[in-house]
Amino acid sequence: MEHNTYNSPFNARYASKEMQYIYSPDFKFKTWRKLWIALAEAEHELGLNVTQEQIDELKAHADDINYAVAEEYEKKFRHDVMSHVHAYGEQCPKAKGIIHLGATSCYVGDNTDVITMREALNLVKKKLVNAISSVAKFADEYKDMPCLGFTHFQPAQPTTVGKRATLWLMDLVMDLNEVDHVLDTLMLLGSKGTTGTQASFLELFDGDHEKCKELDRKIAEKMGFKTCFPVSGQTYARKLDTIVCNCLALIAQSCCKFSNDLRLLQNLKEIEEPFEKNQIGSSAMAYKRNPMRSERIASLSRYVMIDALNPAWTASAQWFERTLDDSANKRVSVAEAFLAIDGILDLYINVTSGLVVYPKVIEARLMSELPFMATENIMMDAVKKGGDRQELHEKIRQHSMAAGAVVKVEGGKNDLVDRIAADPAFMTTKEEILAILKPANFVGRAPEQTADFLNEVINPILEENKDLLGVDVEINV
Image 1 (cartoon, rainbow, N blue to C red):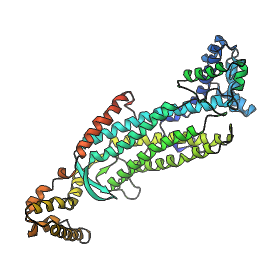
Image 2: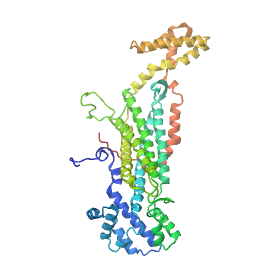
Image 3: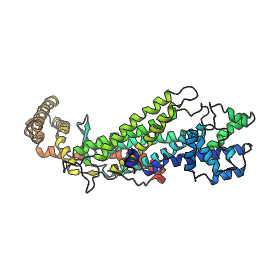
């Protein structure tokens, strides 16, 4: 790493080597050459004067890019595409005259952008599937463990640790559905020419419109796509970048929600993110175990969500058949959205694979609040014994307020059970009340909901995507 110039944090700290390669110059320029080969093959197959010998020569040098030569040409031409056309031509003297035949710069530039987004989305999908798998294991392990539920971050009806994890999972399932939809509907630009009219290709094919249409179909097939944009200007509709980045922003929302929940749980000392043996939580307070990874998830997620505005503005600001004020913005915003979400998913997998649960703390917090939640059951039992429901309701309200004051004002323990047991209106003993206060009696269908969700929704997803399971993530902490 150079220490005397700016280095992107995405390279140095956040994104994986796999995602960094997808957005590397090497991937880009090798894809340019694949597109030039596909164009030459399609033109050959459609009867243009492009020979198999020329195509074979292009294929022979598809990967050994002469970067130094291209850089010298770019200094001369001030044009990145033409510099690589000429550099490729030096390696392929027989094919030199047919490279980029009929095409404009966007043929390689825009088609490569779509191919790169597809490759990056496939990596995102792989990590998303592994994140789902990681959380599913956690949910299954803790599906029966009662814990205090919260609404408004105030104590509410109990749930289970595993059921809470299914809420994180449901978000990820919706994200996976969106990724699959975007991947399924991606289209290449194809070979549309300078204003999208294919005029240059119509000239090459002597006015044969069907061959112009077939050219797009062949290029799409050769590059592994179902179709090309049916119409376009010189560029593909920049709305595609918005769709892709919105998809990434959805994942960021899910990951950020999870990280926020975990940070709150870590404050409550119920569940913590992994913490290495020699990891330092604070330079001043040696005892601290800060949720650094969850905070990084939140931080990067915020970036991705806001970054999605960039392609939206760019798409809305295009003039007619094209304008170049998209280029600088999109090459930064789209790439960094992928690099960031890649780092987020690595963190998500790392954290959920090593969550630390503290059952005693979870139980103690639940039991401290459970008497309040059991009051309806206690009241109904007293009514069955002949008590007046309205009078009992008022007595419970008064006892609850008094017990709450002991906890909040005096710092004492919740004595609601003792108060009710001592009140003859309830006709019950402390032992009878304590028998009611079993956490499992108050979680409703949480364990069953969790099991059903895992069996009916998650397991089929994991089975369908079993080839994607298994990923090594490296976290820089």
